[in-house]
Amino acid sequence: MRMTVGAPSSLLRPPTESSGLAAPAPKSRRAARLATMGLAFVLVLGGVAVAAPWLAPHDPTRQALRERLTRPTLEAADGRARFLGTDHLGRDVLSRVIYGARVSLVVGVAAVMVGGALGATLGIAAGFRGGLADSVIMTLADAQLAFPFILLAIGIIAVLGPSFPTLIVVIGLSGWVTYARLLRSQVLGLRSREFVEAIHALGGSVGRVVACHILPNVLSSLVVVATLELARAIVLEATLSFLGLGVQPPTPSWGGMIHEGREYLDTAWWISTFPGLVLMLTSIVVSRTGDWLRDLLDPTLRGE
Image (cartoon, rainbow, N blue to C red; front, top):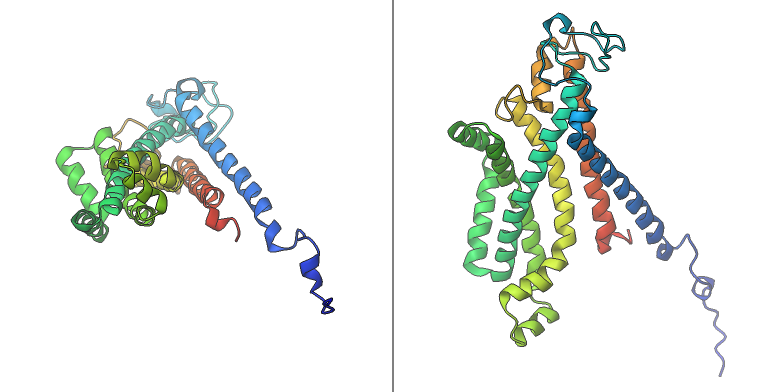
């Protein structure tokens, strides 16, 4: 007996580009392009920081009081251009911005490595072990979130003194909670999966399970969080330098330059404006790169 009831035409023809099945491919390609552009920007900024001695037109710490507060110009008194002007001590702003990238990237990347290593270790331990270890680690995380970080940073730096290692440790300690909470939630779901139970049944050690099977499954999330935390670390370094708790003069840093130029905003706006713009652009691009990487690496977001 032949069925005569007609089926909807949408079920008989192949899906078109307007259907939901074809949407993820363009979105994934767009996310891949944007992520590539963001990573390229970070690499270029890193190249500028590494090549600062060759790219900077002037010595960033050399003072020239006769040329103080020179406006951005192509013809300075010494015959060399001052593209971004000079500060209140006659130091070239462009050279200081270029050298400031070194401070921001070194402190930011090192702090992300410290916070990521600590947070990932504690998060995986809390999620995999559970019980008392989970309770203790999450209690520490909640306690840190409840305490104002600026006060903690002021206390630590006041005791240890402002320096590069202290700044890296302080910023790194501020970010471990994000890694720990995220990886704990993912490991809680992974430890009850069939492949993990099978490895335990075959006599696999805890270290082997974590290193070979748990860590690869959370690595994409770890990369995304590290990218987002890099932007936060760069801004936090600038904030501490602005408050006088970060990199000390005469080493140029973007936050310190903004602090030095705040008294000259009405007469020499360029001292604070240009490092502030570079800091804003860098933080936006790095944080957006993290968002694009999340869209690219997270399979649950590809079909949105």
